[in-house]
Amino acid sequence: MALQRLWAILAKEIRQLRRDRLTFGMIFGIPMLQIIMFGYAINTDVRQLSAAVADQAGSALSAQLQSQLEASQVLRIVARVDSAASLQKLLDRGQVHVGVLIPPDFERRLQQSARPAVQLLVDGSDPIILASVQRLLNMPLGMDTAAQLEPEVPLFEVRNFYNPERRSAVFVVPGLIGVILTMTMVMFTAVAIVRERERGNLELLINTPVSSLELMLGKVLPYILIGLVQVTVILLLGAQLFNVPLNGSLLEVYLAALLFIAANLGLGLLISTLVGTQFQAIQMAFFFFLPSILLSGFMFPFDGMPRAARLIAELLPLTHFIRLIRGLMLRGVELVQLWPDVLVLLGFFLLSMTLAVLRFRKRLD
Image (cartoon, rainbow, N blue to C red; front, side):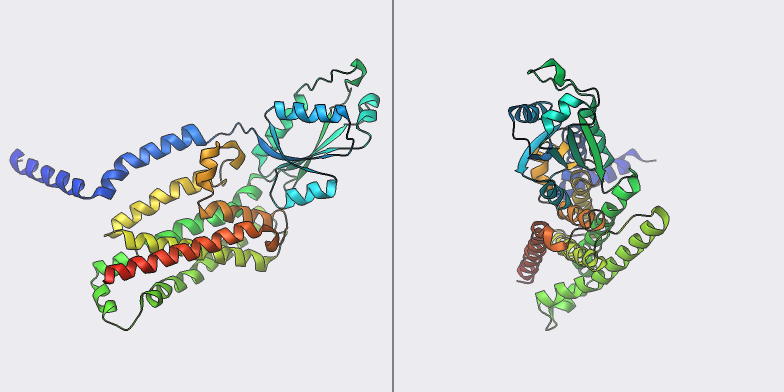
């Protein structure tokens, strides 16, 4: 082995790596991103769960109870309503994770100690959230008015909604639809344009009457069908193997999936116009996968993340699709009730497609 020739090859690889700024950035970017997310953003000790309160007692004692619930840092009261039906509606829409129902006879229940005085209505589709709320059962909530108010039965009664058997598959499978679609759809289209360039087909396409928009849409449409086939496979396997329920409309599940597929395909095409090789396209797609999977609420509760991480997650299509698909499949709500997330996905698709077309046109110039 000639050390001189080995050194020449080594020097060549280093120079090539320095010229590939994307790869050079990934060397430092991926470990930094993972350390920051796992150390700072990911937290299974969930606190500050969004909660709504229906205080039908309206007494000083019930107000004191709410203050102590917030002081426990387990709950963060974000809405106040007047009935159990309103609490249920907020839970169905995914706007809160916990509903606190304080009945009109709250003080009498405390004195009689025959049954729990307060009901906690919990979105138990995520077992981690249910476990966090159950910590309140053992939490002393001192009433400083009278000693007889110390109940002999637990102060709270926890009612678990949407996943009464506490099965992890019920929580994971709907979100898995989004994760699989993100990985495949973004990857497929991220290499679409650069592959044409590497094979020498791009010049041929440029010389045809095909417009940039027609070319982009032509690249996207076949993958929409592939994405819908993947959704069908996951739904069938989830139902047959894990008995995952579908409480909402199947048609609306496909509409939400269609919107999400389009958003991911638009993003993939945009990536394809930003890179020069298929390898770079795969690297950039992988860089997008990490925050999507870790911050979207697929694996870890969204409320357990710090505010900065939640703001970043709001920019990811997977975050909004997971809210849609769990709302449709587990909570049985209608798609129109989840319109904010629908609008975000639609806006994401239009923005990414517009930028991809503009970027491609710029390259033609």
